Image 1 (cartoon, rainbow, N blue to C red):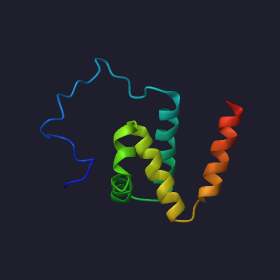
Image 2: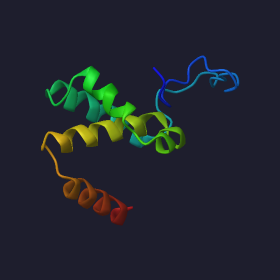
Image 3: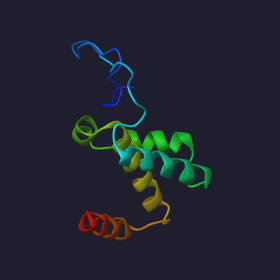
Length: 102
């Protein structure tokens, strides 16, 4: 593997410094994304291999600049749009509603 997501063990990337007592979720939206994954996966919208491949298809700069659960959200959005379960317009519209409500 030679993609940007294959950073483990690469020279020059510095040490891995995990947080002591690191929480599973740093922000509330991450918990929501985890729940969305459980329902979309259990609903048969994609399998684990398709999910991982969708993450691997992310733009490398976006992958490196985004947090872990943003990778999950990107994968779910991509797969649901590709399978016509949602449209990009529906996702963008809902995001606009949430932003307006905040």
